[in-house]
Image (cartoon, rainbow, N blue to C red; front, top):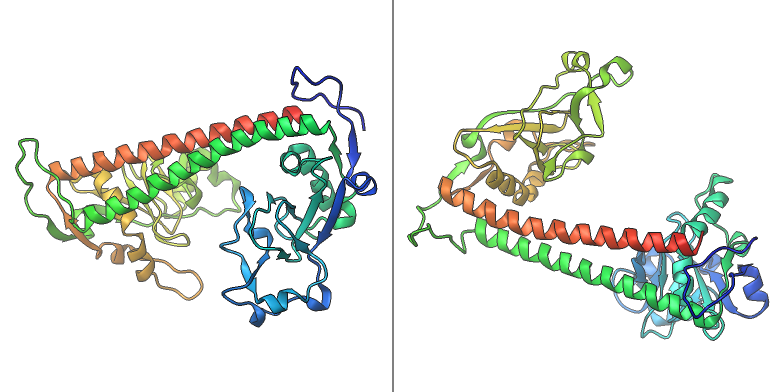
Length: 413
């Protein structure tokens, strides 16, 4: 494989060489490379416990780290029976089966952890090859392309360990590896801190909504006086119109690809500005769908129940997604937050054997406290400002992730 340009640091010259994983094993740079294929020692479900040695699966590899809090556990005496797939702190873990691609560094105070059949460990001689540098290689598109080709040649969603050893990875000098790993780690740390900030804001919002809608905290009028007491109402008391959506015959291409936005579950967010699918005027007429005007509330009552948004343009919806028009004087943003907070109620009210749904008639029966119009506006304003902070933080995370992806593409073509 030809040399590839690298992200250049002034103190390093020359091109990188690329070698196979097998080459690293042969030269003792990679001193351990095994998966968790335990054969007859594979643990039975009844052997797992609430304590003991972590049993790590692909689902435990999250954001470059191993989340041992969510991993299964095996009693120590049972864990000692395993002969392979035993990982230690500092190992690089790669999900190679079923869920393919997640990669993480194992950092733990346990003497060892046991890997499931879905995970391979890579144990590097750190004096020759940095596992933190390798972590970024395994996240790069060039590495993804290599294991994607393997999967495309098989009906099974896996990358066998024998195939992994054929993959090429770059081999700069140890000093350059360390410098690049340090630089990318600083980017990862920023992403991590931003995610922590977002989590904290979302937790604060959840607590604030709990206090607002249980009326543990109250707002004041501009002149300092208390607002009037809240009135207990049913959702139907503030609704002018509510109705389910409809789906045109999906086999008829004349019904789709028009200019009318058609909301499906993936389209529902706080602001529904565009939809992945549109329908034609003919599709509208040939189905039970109807147009909901800009500003309508859109509520999922089937499949993913309780998701809610506000239409930013005229839209239609598929069945299982209701449109709601409120009475004059009712603040749409306030009711949006009421519906968001009430999603557990919708789930409890859902009926059906295979596919759960909440009928529009049931939605109208939901009760809640309704403050005055002015207090509705204040509450909506406070929660909207908090949502804006969460969205801004989400945007910063996306920007940093895009920045890192660009760096990886530049380094590992």
